[in-house]
Image (cartoon, rainbow, N blue to C red):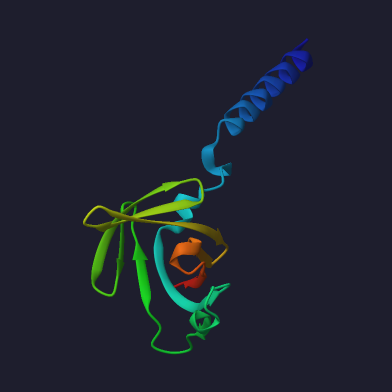
Length: 134
């Protein structure tokens, strides 16, 4: 009888440990918005698909590259600070004077890619900026 009681106690302890482990929040992946927070240095800037081919260009930064700092509510770049909101993979940046810039973004590992597509009236250009986390 003593052996059965010991086995039941061990099984109860094991079951409780499993239940507590199942409630652990450490297994949750951070959201794209959470991954956005940090310091990002520009790697490349590509403009393509423009109606006027002269507006297309590609630049890669190798030294003295611009850094953007993103907090939970603000983006600071070139000494300017803007507030922003995130919905899924869409970043809406309050540029001031009632102007909001809306871009798509993806954070993958230590790479941030921001994409913006102009309307045909604005030249139809596609802007893709790639940053690395620093």
